[in-house]
Length: 400
Ligand code: CTP
Image 1: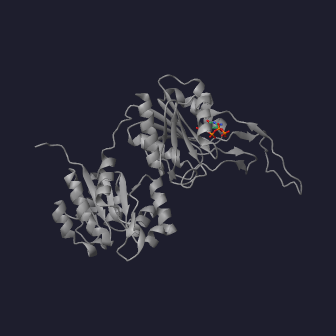
Image 2 (image 1 turned 45 degrees about the vertical axis):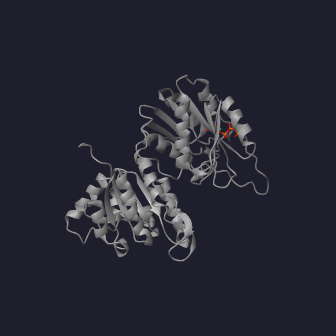
Image 3 (image 1 turned 60 degrees about the vertical axis):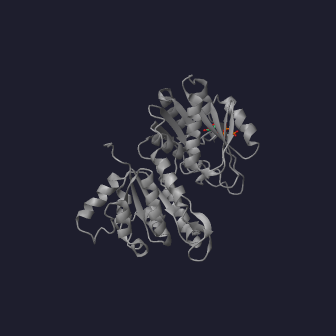
């Protein structure tokens, strides 16, 4: 018999009618060789008895931190540590809200907060609850922290409504979970530098010129590269999202700043992915004091051209390095992107039409075309995390 430790999935079950489907999900995961431990919320126990999961999993089921013997206090940390993947299915609006806000008031919410394992949730709820801006904002928060979300399916719901909110098919959830666990460490030994976010060019001590870049695409690339085993340096402009843990973060403010940080770091890198949106112009002169209203006359601010970071780095690209740039366009997307690929000496350019719904600034999804000198791959609408993986796979293909 093999002495190899089985991969452990901690399965969180919350209180929705779809809780019964978690039994089948557990079985599917076991069939794929996983050792599954179950944590239930109190409400989940109203739908399925803990004994069912205890019998199926062959392990005690954790329910509540305070009602079980004191050993569970320690046990929830043990479970959090044991998990190779933490999967919550079905995930109610309540657990999603608690996770987004950092509330830990029962066994499941404390355990998921303590884990360092990848976390995946499969929401299931009434359509109105799913579409509620609070839920959507909580989902966006979790996605930005790297939580994998299996978007609910659309169909006939137990409450009688029809719409989005149905737990995705358990076989799909199981496959997504396995895919995360089997994610290849195919970037081990590679050093990747990612630039992300906007720049800020000061006009005076209180005002600046900037753009709508949120940094989400670059952060997703940094996270994905790290998960695939790369050593990641993230050069970031001022953004409102948290960098993934485990990457080296170097902040920048202006385009000149970005250029200097990039030049300091570029020679040690194998792959450079430039998703930052540096301002092409800066104020010719920064007013030392706050600029006062002119009282009825127009104001003209003279701008000076900034260096092109990608083009500057591209000039000294070594044969062993792979450079990727982005082209955020509003018209003639492919033609403009191909021009930039050439002009900036890039190996790949990721083109997107920022005016398309679901693409561009401040959303968690994107629609892109990956363009290389020989090839072009148009991808459908997908999460920025999935776009990140596609870009990295494309880069590895180029380096073969
Ligand atoms: N870029 C750069 N330095 C700049 C402007 C852009 O390094 N001053 C990089 C971006 O990080 C991106 C690529 O060049 O990878 C394309 O950026 P984009 O703003 O689309 O192109 P520009 O060259 O600025 O052209 P334009 O604004 O005229 O479309």
